[in-house]
Image (cartoon, rainbow, N blue to C red; front, side):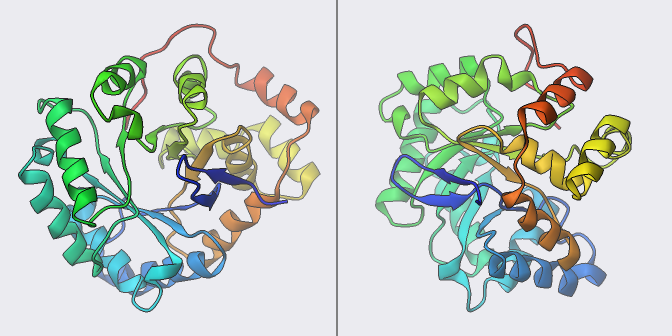
Length: 283
């Protein structure tokens, strides 16, 4: 049975989507990246996450190309820089994103991280964009518990649709307080870099003997095991980047992977959950 996540307005999405960080940077990979995103939509990974920051708008252009003729099948998310999150600038930034994405609306628009512009003003900007039909929902990214509590005190703050944060097996800090807070609010969490960012940490996860043994026993890849672990809890969506069709198909198959209590016990022994509040991890 495939995992799904429900938003407060009833939107129902598969618990694995598609990330686009680092897409649009190499022109030689353009066609491959477009094909991967299209394959993902066909495989049911309908949520596509991007941002004006990624490749300075280049990732949004790749997504826009991928969505030609497919826009209504996708659930499109983009993010605004914190310094563009004022009442006037956010509208202009959103319009630039819409042009690059070749669409007239976003399903979800996020504040990429918290900056110097008051939350109250960013909230008004998001509400204006909603009223204009340019965005269906709004949310935040890289908000810790205090940030979220502060947001909820603002008028309309309870309409925040999601919090997108770093979450993977080697970065479990949100489980102590932020994830329970979001679950209590019925606010889905979007997990970016669910396989850890490329580099030493990801290599350690992919080659970890305990994870390799569990994956082998279940006849899945370690990457599929890591994705299944991230989405094991209610209300969590993983948004791995996959710039090849093979990776997209592998990610989609992870929706059907279930982990037993024994699997989870072995994973917890190798990667203990947090026992105290930790600063929000970001990359």
